[in-house]
Length: 253
Image (cartoon, rainbow, N blue to C red; front, side, top):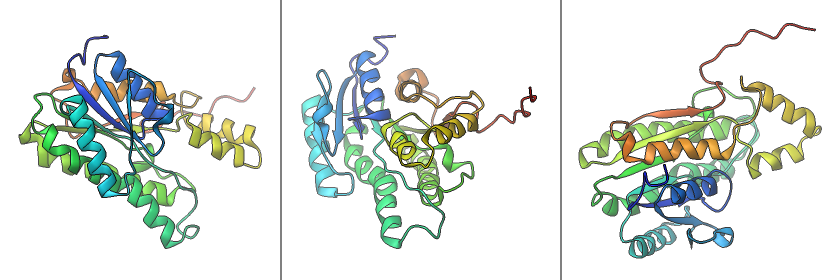
């Protein structure tokens, strides 16, 4: 498995922690030369290459992508992972917060992909993988803004796949369930009863536990690999069965 991406180059946004870092490390383990774009890439260690970029700033994105492509010698794989969260109903967030989250989660993908397209078009194995969410396909409480942003990511993924398939660029996304990331950890810490809240999140997924960042990374690596050469316009759920399974309640002891 360690040579499945040998000779390919990859760019991962939001790659300094959580799903992004797990993905960058796995792509590197599989043989790719990997660069990470992040607001603070200080945690990125060799052989990964860290670049500072803000996905809400087009000049920042273009500059970082250009330097990444120069150092890597091109871009074969783009993982649009940078994102932010939000909690609450439609009544709980002001317009400014809606604009901020959509700017990061949706327009961030637009900016980075737009800057990377000239390099992807030159690749024989071009692949884009967007980090979406189970929130795009399931109604989750207290996630109106976040769900709206990820629903847009799902639709954007399909549109991008249609636009670029004849250019030889595959576009897919992963739909993780609740992942044990620093952001989720902060949500749990802020809960009135963190232990009960974690138990509720665990119980929401049929496997009875949170998804790991490494499990999402494995799905991203597959979609990015030439082994998935006939897979495009697909949303791959990594959600512990949440999207498709309907289990009966466990018998009471």
